[in-house]
Image 1 (cartoon, rainbow, N blue to C red):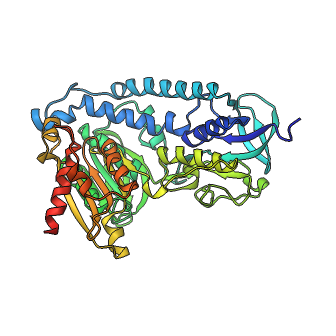
Image 2: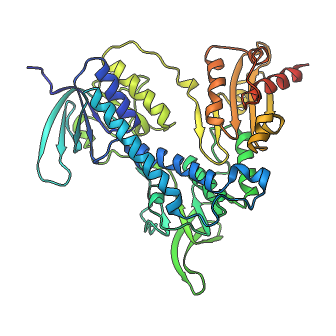
Image 3: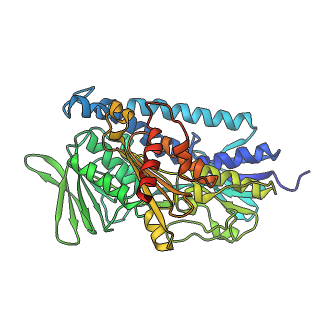
Length: 468
C-alpha cells in the first residue's frame, strides 16, 4: 500500500490549482483536487475574470462603442441596455468554461473532492463536507495551496450587495445605475469603471494613491485616464475614504454618500467598493502545517513556489502580485513540475500583463520608469492607431503602441499598448523580447495589410528615425 492516499493534493480549482492538478496527472501521479463549491473554476470562472471579460464584450457590443467614431456617440445597438442584457452572455460562458475545466480534470483522472479543506498536519488534509455533517482525513505526499482570494471588505462599510457592492456582486445587480462611485483605482476598479462609463453611467473613481496602476507605463495610464475623462468619468486621486453611508433623497430615492478625508463628499446612486483582495486562507488552519499568512492572507514562497514547509507549495493569487489568471496557470504548472523533480523552464520577467479596461492595456518587459531608474540608455518608437488603416477601419483613433529599445544594441526592452486588441497584439512583442531580438526585426518583417500588427513596423521606423 502507498504511504499516502495521493501523490499530490491540490486545494482550489481555479486556474492555478487546475493547471497544477493536470500537470501532476500528466506526470503519472495520483491527484486529488479539493473544491469547496459545486462548480470548478474558482473565482476566475465564476465571479472574476471570465464573467467580467464577458461582461466587457457585451458592453462593447450593445453600447456600439466600436462604432462611435464612425456613427457618432449617440449610436447604440440597443437603446435601453439592462443588466439582464449584459449578463445573458456571461451566464452561458461561465457554464461552458466550468464544464470544459471539469471535463479536462475527468479526462486526466484527477479526483475532484467537493469539500472544505483544512490542515491537520503538513501531509494531512481534513475534508469538511458542505451541506452535510461529517468529515474525513486524506493524506498527500505533496500539497499545493491554490485557494485564490476573496474581496477585501472594511467592517465599517454597510455592504448590501445592491447599493454598496463589491466586484463579486456585479453579477447580481438588478439594474444599471445612472451614477456610480468606484472606491479603489486598481485593475478591477478601473476595468469596471471603464465599462460603466462606456454605458453612459456618470462614474467617479476615488483612490488614495496619486497615480493609478503604478506597474504600468505612465504614458499609457495617462492615455487611459484621458480617454475615460472624455467619457465624463471623474477622478479623485490622493483622496482617502472616511465613511460610506446610505441615505434617502426625497426626489431621487435611496442614494450613497461617500465622505472623503479631505472633507469632500461624493453622492451617487450606487458605490462599487474595490480596494483589493485578500487570500482565502482563513479557514485552512495553516498553523497546523507550520505555515502562516500575512495580514492580507498571502503566503510567502520561493522561486519554485515552495513554502517554508518543503512538501507544501502555494500558487496563484494567494501568493500576491501579479495575480493574473495567465500567470497563475504557469505557477501551477511550475509548482507541480518542481514538486516531482521534472525539469521545466519559465521566464517570469517576460509574463505579459493585460488590463481589460475600455480601451484595453497590455504590456511586456520593462517600462520607461524602470529603465530610467536602472540607468539603461533607451529610445522610444511609437505608432498611433489612427496612422494605421486597420485602426481607422475599427474606429479606434485613440490606440497607441510603444516600443522601448536599447540605444546602442537596439535590443527590444519593452512593449506597451493601449487600444483595441492590445492583449492579443502584445504577444508579438513578447516573442521578440524573449529571444533577445532587436527593433530592426520589425523593420525587416512584412505584416499583413491592413492589420494592427503593422503598428510594430511603424513604431520601429519611428524609433530608428529618432536615433538619426
